[in-house]
Image (cartoon, rainbow, N blue to C red; front, side, top):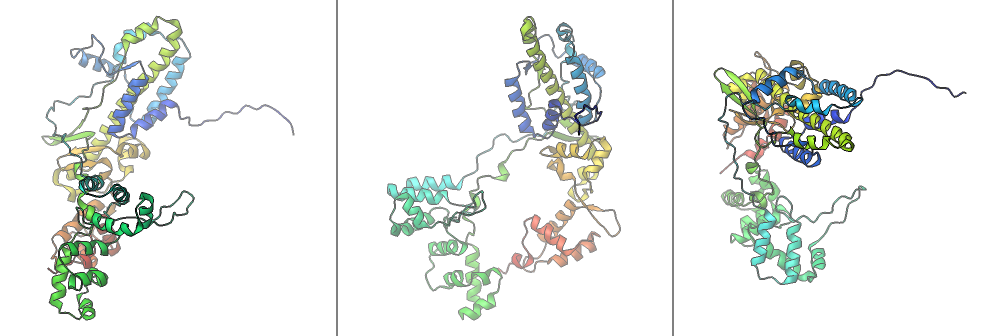
Length: 501
């Protein structure tokens, strides 16, 4: 054994801060990018969201052409940032010529995204209302009640333990170590609120009769019984007896079994089942915390048809354009002690501007490639969506699949067919008998259409859907695949879709 020095030459990929920043910006959504820009404006004094004086609209086209002439066109952000990192390191090794830098203003300006002559863009809903919250609705009713302070504290604990369906959830929660906390009871809530345990069921019954009727029930049976009692049904009537003892048979539409067990006419079972179907099984249906219908999504790009061509326009509304703060740079340049500080902040500002511009170009390039490969979708609709994977777009634009994945995540495209996430266009292929393969999303829509057009009194089974797809569309698909797509669409099985009334 001995101690000696040895030289070794090796290559390795180094994730520089600039490269990490560019990759992070690439996968940010539009709202996250706006927040990131605001944060950088606060932290970097060299950045400004105001255009420097003397650079008006008249010289915008000229400066853009000069900038484009000097700017190397880089398609892959990874290789772009590696090359630029080498240049930054070379410049950092020698003294920065600030006078020359400030004279060449055209190299500091990020090219303004052009609209290509299209000024009329699809309108965006701006006036969105907040969806009604079940807990707020219940607390409002609680304030209007005549409960005592102790009863009110107990009611607040009950309302605070409602789940997303409107049921009272007192089940234990899982701890980080894998164990579970013990289940609670209404007596435990009463003890915490200082209420006598004997009074807890009475206060809970009052809460369950708040609007919506049946809220704070502990299961489906109790929820339906509360609504039946509120509707005037009494103990012993078929509606109440079916809910209490034959709910599992009612779910399966097994009316004959209910007739045998209750020894009542079939017509009475039918009438009771019709009444029960009018009850609400999910009290919080209209009181969700998030309403998907009122969530506004601002698209990153617009797709507009110009004659026979499809044009991609980036949406720059809401995103602040960044410039170099030249006035502040000139003042700080006069102080020799601030030169190092100015140099670091100035390089960071340049990197951020270039990374944001490269992000914009990459999104447009990927969108144009999607339009090229999915042209029939934009022309005719979802039924003509073609199978496509990340590799197809990556090979066309000359980027890595991971880059395409980052670009298409949380990025949205506004099209004549609707608003879609870029990932929507990537689908696996389903074989056809004669024609070319079809996208899985198109198959889902075909299944949905068949179920919508079915006879509700005699719904079609998954096997019948398989046969109909092969006969009408030439799509060969397994029954288990139909069941999987049906569940993804939120559609029940044929036995639970059947309507007798």
